[in-house]
Length: 458
Image (spheres, rainbow, N blue to C red):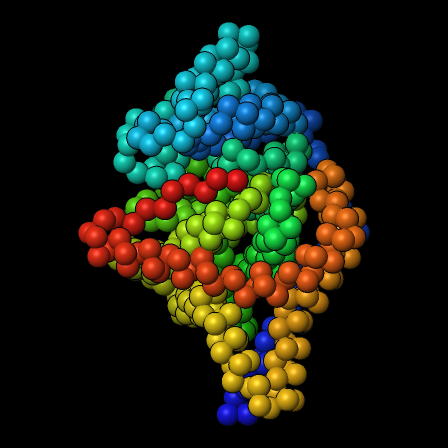
């Protein structure tokens, strides 16, 4: 038993240190290069710019949030003739009251009409006319309508949320990358920093915002960069190593740019499943279509209550469990799934199971080692490295992150200390969302109802 406990705690320490080194690598690179100055633009002729269509799905949003979104995207630094900003509403708006003082459909429709009467034609409103379906159905309907009505046969689709505040030069950055690759790259991912509402959050939710942003630096970006690099290499002589390193990369709905014909090839956004963005990324991975990560960030809101955090986490976990459907659909479509992708699929299943079981297994094994002081000490050490040490390192980069977030992330010294002290609790509660999803799913199945989570308010 001692050997098992020692091996497990040493493994946790190894994983933690590896994540810390990954995070330091990307944060150091960020400090040297800066998030917005790493590309030089050579797009002097307007016809060279690809048409970029920004799609923002909306459901029961308050007028203030919509106005802030429109104000921000109106400032995007990109030729007006090569930009469309599309707000996609849904008939589901009227099935459940969310805010009696706001009608997203009516407000967006009137606002877009007002802008058009003033000669502003970039903004568009598309209404999904059904009460069934989810965000994926909204987006697929809007993209089909755009494909019919736009004169351009090739365009880039950018998906953002109503609370997204991307850098104003992101469109130029993507266009530059797209043209440098001779239009052959067709999928780009911008990553998220969850600090847009940081100053308004209670202290534990500030800790949670740091936790989510840490995941960007220690997992999402390193994994995506490595997989993109592998996709650009000739691997004939290193096939075994390539397969071992192969991973399925999910996409994030806010900040994903994809060429319209690539989206068609992937079968549009997966419907009847949770988290269409994650699953589209897995679909692209299985189709061997690389997604290039962009070192530029979308500034978004973090959840503001523990309850909304649990619901959000549960929804994300529920989406991850649907990876099996994407795998099956790809196999049933007649496409051959390579041995490397089969291995990557198994690795991702393991990672998902760690999300659910990791904190529980750690707690049980730590408690079982209470009579063995040196094993207990190693267990506590591994947990502190995974949480407090990692958070402390992250806090050392607060000045750089504050610059990136345009002054949104500026915790005081006392807040930094409290966030670090709360980090073990935040890590241990990471499994509550997945557990909530499982319990909710069982409860709904017993009652004979379809599974559906309500939108998460932020």
